Amino acid sequence: MSRHPRAGMRASSAELINIPRLMAAYYQLQPDVSIPEQKVAFGTSGHRGCALDFSFNETHIHAICQAIAEYRQAQGLTGPLYLGMDTHALSEAAWGSALEVLTANGIEVRIQSDRGYTPTPVVSHAILNHNRAHPEAQADGIVITPSHNPPRDGGIKYNGADGGPASSTATGWIQDRANQLIAQEGEGICRQPLSLALAQAVPFDYIDHYVAELDQVVDMAAIRDAGIRIGIDPLGGAGLAYWPHIAERYGLDITVVNPSQEPTFSFMTLDHDGKIRMDCSSPDCMANLLALKDDFDIACGNDPDYDRHGIVDGEGLMNPNHYLAVSIHYLFTHRPEWSKALAVGKTLVSSSMIDRVAARLDRKLMEVPVGFKWYVSDLLAGQLGFVGEESAGASFLRMNGQVWSTDKDGFIPSLLAAEILAVTGLTPHQYYAMLVEQLGDPVYRRVDAPATFAQKQVLAKLEADAIEADTLAGDPIIARLTRAPGNGADIGGLKVVTEQGWFAARPSGTEQVYKIYAESFRGAAHLERLIEEAQALVSATFARAGV
Image 1 (cartoon, rainbow, N blue to C red):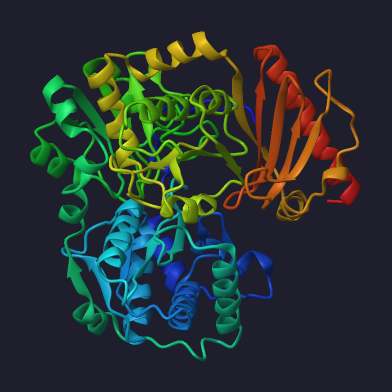
Image 2 (tube, helix red, strand yellow; image 1 turned 180 degrees about the horizontal axis):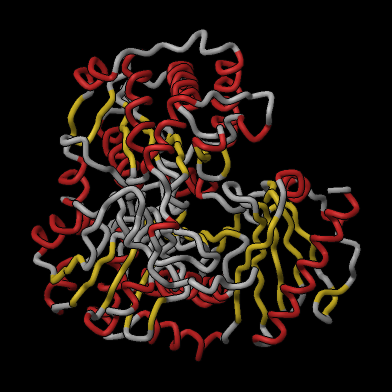
């Protein structure tokens, strides 16, 4: 896709979503689940959609939450359900709709004391702490969020008793039951007025519960003693209220450079395609913070539900893959209490630099499909020390080797960047340069290409033999993967590998595009050739399928 001429510039009034119209659509429009685009469909991070498109409406949330209530009962979960939400306009409405159904089903729902916003990692952390203390009454959770998606979108994801994104088995059951409930016009859905639901909800201080334990996972004293100056742009997200508490509790020099929090996200700069998107891995979305990079030692941005991180130092925004490599190397050499048997987790579209770092550290590498759910059981079992995704999502263990969260946590990688500088004297960019000197310098890029719903379906179900070519960018193809090497799970797309590079293609679960990830060991020109040939190969498969 070509770069939009206004990318990186402040959104204009004409580019803002009409919030009243969006909210009216949420309550008034009724989806038809005989139309695929209007059905409940859980992707790698829950169900997402837009009320204006009949894909995220009150009917969807009522049905999904009734299905979750029935699922948790079948699983014997009798503890509380931790309910969080981010700052998208539809999140507030969906949060209320969820509360109406969950409480009507007799579930104890724990909400932020002041009806404030609650990030994804905070919900995961709360579930794990509760279940560690109360194994006889296991808890689970829901986060209302479409992550970094544009302001018009809404989303909902379910986290089970393991604290992480629900398994495909769980979400498959939930989405099928939800669609059945919608098809029978809501028969079987228990709900009550929001006023009663709010009266029954249990206030919970998520902020203190989370912030009080941060020094168990990041060396806050080292950051404080080194006087690291930290700039934070919450990008209008759910973590805004947490940073003053973190600064006060641990004596850190933290400046929130943008305290704005409103549902049109009018303070954002436009992404590469001209859309408002709170993607902290995008230089265009992070333009406001990048303009202030010289004012701080470390600066960080996060997406609305705080499960992603964007790290900025004097050299600019850190490439997400590069920062994953830095984090892995630093943590496995600065956590003496971690077991020597702990492995590194990566998605198959993450950089091969991670493979090289893991090999240098003599650590096992677990390569899985895109989706944090693939890490959950091994994180919980204490078999993985660090797990990450190329889209700037990560989590890692406490200093004592115990699990911290089983979902992506945007806070701790952000604070880790300050710890790395405090302990080593190296910025993240300088640390990566050190790794490059030792391990080489692969070139990586991700691009989005337009794709219809039908084309995305073809790509998601592609078989390895659908790629007829024998070479890629001049090199023999040595592997065509539709299953991940780490666990044998279907990757929902394709990865093609040569000795000198690779590409992977998979459909977006939330937008009408497919994503191409590519990496070359021969430099930028070879990378461009990889991407061009990858797009041609994928287009050929669409043509053969007649879509």
